[in-house]
Structures are given as structure tokens and as C-alpha cells.
Image 1 (cartoon, rainbow, N blue to C red):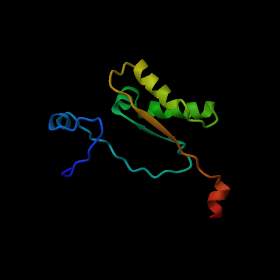
Image 2 (tube, rainbow, N blue to C red):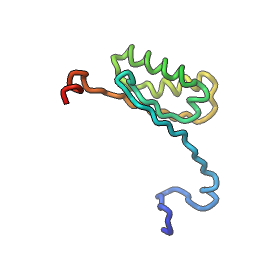
Image 3 (cartoon, one colour):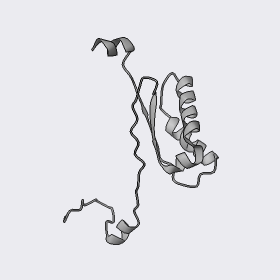
Length: 107
């Protein structure tokens, strides 16, 4: 393989590799019990909706649905599209399910 992974069904020729560019933004954040969800998304979401609005939408969703995250990623994609995003919009929302406070202090 000469240092390259072989992907089944994917064109890995030099021409295809030249078209792929990925420069993720990586941020380290200390999490606490106040953090209820983690949103991983492409720039199609962040550029259209913005951090504060994404946070507000996720908090409202969790409040209205007793902490259930199912469907919130789709709602964020819909909001980006509603605001005119023509970019790809990929969203994953991870529910941060903290143990009860009394259980956390007992260990």
C-alpha cells in the first residue's frame, strides 16, 4: 500500500486526492454539568446560524423534549437551510448524560 490506506469504492488517485481539503477547527473545552450537549458540525451550519443561535436552539430543544436529542441535528440543518445556506451542512449532536450529582460525589 506504500503508506496509503486502500478505500473500497473510493478513487484515491492523485487527482482525487488533490481535490480533498480538510482543515478542521479543534478546540479544547473543560466540560461541566451545565454542558448538556456537544454539537459537531460543518461550516455550513456555523456560517449560516452562528454559535449563539445554535446554542439557543439546542437548549430550547432539550428543554421542550425533556433532554432528548433525537431530531435536533435535523432541526439545525433545517435552520441553516432556512437562513439560506447553500453549503453542505453536516451535524452531529451528542447528549452529555451526566450521572446524578450525589453519585458523582460518592466516588
